[in-house]
Amino acid sequence: MSKVHTTPQGERFDCQQEDAVDLLNRKVDKLDKCVFFGNGKPGLTTQMATLQQSQAAVCRVAWITLAAVIGQLVYLFFDKMAK
Image (cartoon, rainbow, N blue to C red; front, side, top):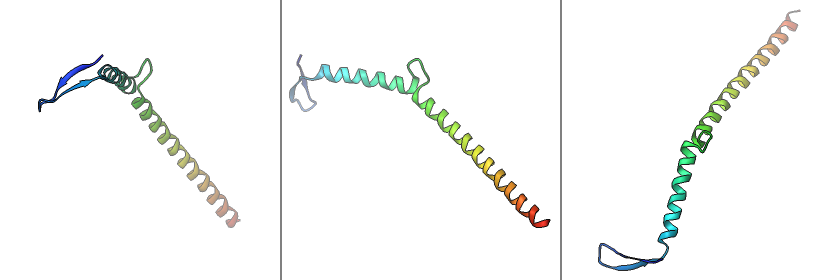
């Protein structure tokens, strides 16, 4: 289905793909809603924020564990040296 449009300069043209463009716009709008608001689940932005928070928590636990292990090794080393 072709529609005739006129530009501000007075040029006329046929838009033969207007229905296809409208369909694509509707699909993009639906994808935007799914990404930001979710489709029955939390949106992707919320999921990404949650994943980043859990990754930061796991990193903190790993650093604390590493520090404890190194501290224990240093303690054992100096304890053996004192005996």
